Length: 84
Ligand SMILES: [Zn+2]
Image (tube, rainbow, N blue to C red; front, top):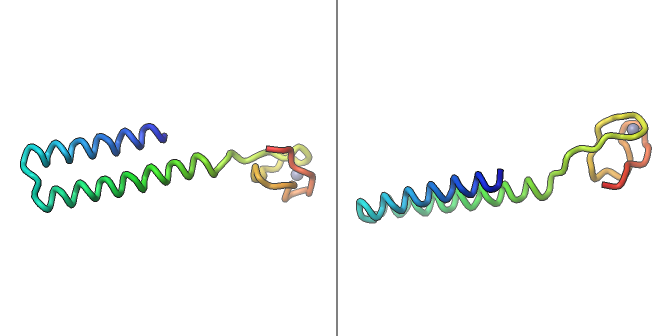
C-alpha cells in the first residue's frame, strides 16, 4: 500500500515534469506540479500514519468478542486482554 502510493505520486510528478519540460513551464504547469507534490506528500503521510498507528483488532480469550488491540481489558466481559 505504501509503496504503491509512493509509486503513483512519483509517476504523477514525473508526468507533470515531463509535460512541463516538453511544453515549457508556464505558471499553470508549475502550479499543477506543486499541487501534485503537495497531494502526494499528504497521501504518503496518511499511508504512513495508517500503517503505523492502526493495528488489527484482537479477540478476547474469555468471550471471543472483538476488542481493540491496545485495550487493557475486554469491553464485553472485562477479562484482561492478552498483551499486543
Ligand atoms: Zn471478553
